[in-house]
Image 1 (cartoon, rainbow, N blue to C red):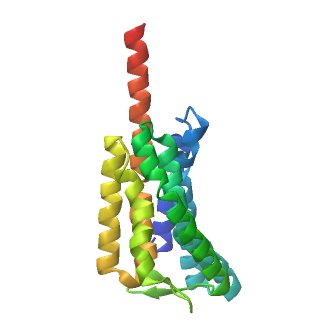
Image 2 (image 1 turned 30 degrees about the horizontal axis):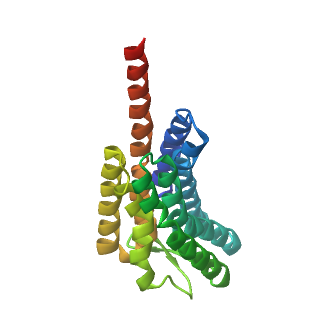
Image 3 (image 1 turned 90 degrees about the vertical axis):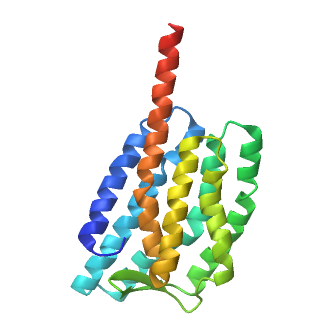
Length: 220
């Protein structure tokens, strides 16, 4: 997350707590991929907190590079393939599930490209406009950004569950704001918006649990 180590670590702790609470509400194995998403966001925020500390205390360049590339690997390689997989596994309606899974091959291609690019051209972190910017000699191609957005956000819009569609709207708005006003820091700022939306995943499971309890009460 941008701004400071304190903000990043605070977000990591809160998002991690949401992730643990969300996992406790899963009842099937196929729900675990979407339930762990807040924990992955927490790991990203913790990595950025470490980077801020590294800037403040002049940590070795090798340590800073590990933290920076851990963050970027999750942002650019993990999310494009994980979002359609996780949302698709939770989808109950076959036609919606098919549409969501249709994005998975694109996500896998993006993940493979990003992974190779990160290993060939490691990223370095720097501070731009009070936020963390990740740069490399390879740079992420501008033409891939629409496909990245498609794979990370569209699965939520394609869900048959209203709350997940609203969550997709939150993430889409965050992506637009990040790209429009924080282009140099897009990956960092966008991932902050995504981490903040983790509460939506918890609410999805909580609402489903309440609905199941109400159904069991009505039948008894």
